[in-house]
Length: 241
Image 1: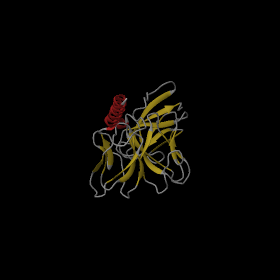
Image 2: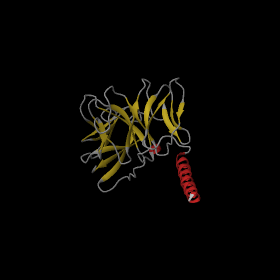
Image 3: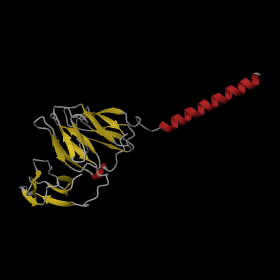
Image 4: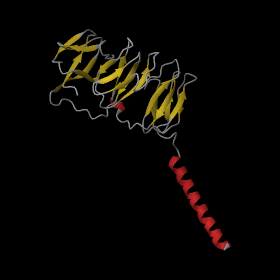
């Protein structure tokens, strides 16, 4: 009887050890689980890395510093090293859990609710949208004061921010009743590109270093699309769905 008890105890112990090793192997070398939020700070104004598994993408969810947190300038992430911050940026970052892809092929746009009311910035959102820098004192909370739909990004209640438009959405130019128009302010002055805008217009790719900001450096009326102050971009015109 004692022999059988000893054999049973040994078997349970062996199974427990195997499960422990499996759990340790599944998490070895990785940071927080996907979807978890971590804080990362450049307290000395120098670059600091915060270890995390960033293969699922990273999103800035709250800036905590007076110094701006700007994607690819004062914060970013690198496989094998985690999230990095620089020049005083301090923020909370969501690790993975969003299925992002192709952001490096995207572009940034600025959208602002300057009068406290809802503003829609027409752009192609099929590749996804994420906020990269809030510039307003009023909060930019997804689903409450900012969001996006088939028309573009919307902001409300004083939210002003820079948004990154993903490049992985499978956008295909043209299509029935739709055309793509390039319009450029090459001399930093306003230029009108005549086109039928009755079906709507949205920005699908910014090609200039100068910002293309809806109703400030680009817009449209019944005469066509206008661009100003160095904005150069491709616009989708037609039946915007």
